[in-house]
Length: 142
Image (cartoon, rainbow, N blue to C red; front, side):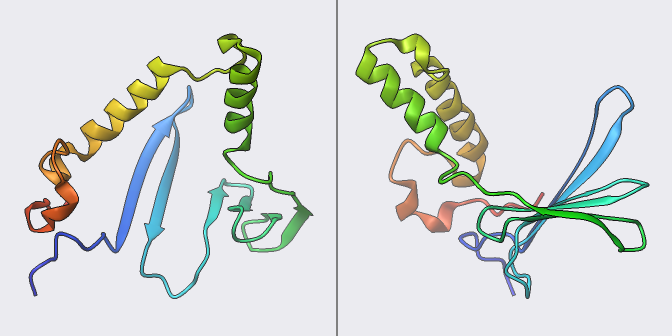
């Protein structure tokens, strides 16, 4: 069957290298998984660290290469991920001091431009009511 451009990808894989020692990493997102779980898994030659996202628990685990639990603890999530930014913006507005907020109009516009650039090709432009012309969206085939 032909791909539906309005359907999201089933999975996304990203590989990267960073740091002086060229540490490598891989990110995998499976949107059609049989499990409902979001976990950041960091694997090294000595251990595997499992960090759940805020919606999937609070238990952090460190396991040996054979799967033996070396250490576990509960990490309380913040009340909301956005709360620190919301608080700094609100404080800056209430006190009339823009220096109290790390984000400003310039950084907001920069973020909006990045988002527009990233989505430009997929949607074939976003200057119009692009959500009404689903049939014109490019299929994300990369």
